[in-house]
Length: 293
Image (cartoon, rainbow, N blue to C red; front, side, top):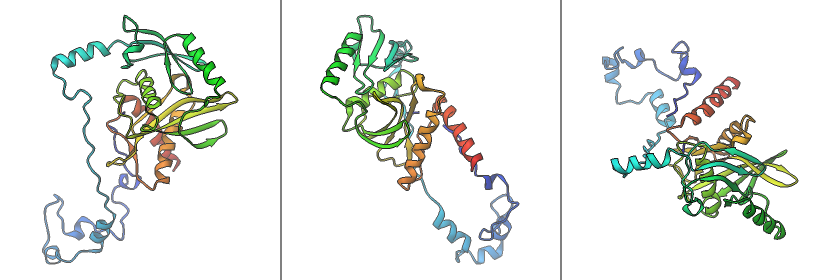
């Protein structure tokens, strides 16, 4: 997954120049400037709840503190040093997905059977519909011919839950489509430095955004979220593939996560702490949303 600073509501940033008729001021409550003084009149009526106190008791929403996640938990100093040495050098040179070739940015813990003798793959070929991995172009072409003859699906597994124009969104259950979702996580790690989810995809839902043409549904990005989140997270990880960045797809995925929360009648926010790339995506989105409102 991908802290983020809180957003101050506009009304709070205006100070106390506008009084709420259902809200008592500090002087009316008998609280001193320092926040500790209580007047005699306030102490006499302490047993009787005021309108403001009743209103607050109803409206206050308590949230569970988010757990602190440590991806290096359980490692001693030697194991941590070895981990850093192994992962500081990327092990895939180029990713070929559909008609695009993308230079990778980071190390990804791919299955060992894919790696060559030197532990390096020059080009990782990926079938864009099944996300199966291949180290040779011939293997990919053979797989695609087999799928074409067998009339294999030309879209992500799961349910199509949105379509508008040439854009389509699929909801993929990590428990039902483990291989697809794990491979999606491996691909994401090639472009995200702080991604930690690889194997345990069962508790997550993956939302894959595709461009649609006559050849099929071509993935351009995705986000994931926990099926059940105690702290109200509606997004765990988000990625737009480098070949499709600067097209507004990242903003679309963020907006979609909030719209889905509205449909579920829940209050949601992205998983914290955020990575640097996560902040770069969310801060402009939040800023423009507030300004538009």
